[in-house]
Length: 303
Image (cartoon, rainbow, N blue to C red; front, side, top):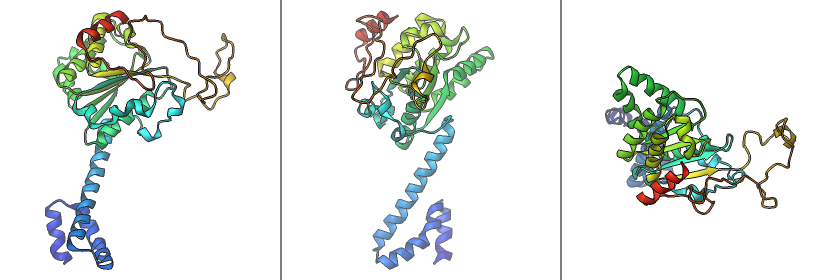
């Protein structure tokens, strides 16, 4: 039987079925499976193998600096975020409908972890993704623009169904930073391609780091048209192992560490950009700007 079946499975490119069918035959005989049960199990094994292979290939292509999942994200360190808040970011609709999200917060709050987890869930849902830092994206496209290769370089960031742009505002950029980032955001916005951004600066401050207030406003405007702004707050997960005194700067008095325990309420400075500014999302309500006039007026009031 193996002499006849192996070449047929090979010709059909059913590599995993070739590896497992003999074991399944023995199991089927022992457990008295029907022909239908045997065939269903064989096909299920093949589908699962292909899904795993595709996922592994997609992870390599995404160029993540590390792999994280949503199950590994510790929400107990977040005073403004809960799993229910980001449920829509993990659904297939987030990608198919071309939504976006800006994850804003201080260093160590888990922004990159969460961004990668969202992208990985998209891969599990059958989509492809790409990860890039804002500095690398801007540098590559700026160089391509000078060399007359902008169209080809831009195509690399148009293809993925989900693009993660990490660390907007962390480093200094060239004078054309806003211009090249606008091309990426605008083209993906037109194509309804999903995007995830992480930043340590509120979007109203992007004009300063990108050297162009008008283009920065246009960038954020397009991201938030079908997107959300989520703030990650709470203590840094990177320094949670340190004593409280080690976290105080030399010129600052040591105070009790902010705790998220249910008994002591963490105190964080309130933002002061005005009553009309984009509000911070609460654990039970996240920001969604759906009206075009309202969205634009909110953005202008924050600039």
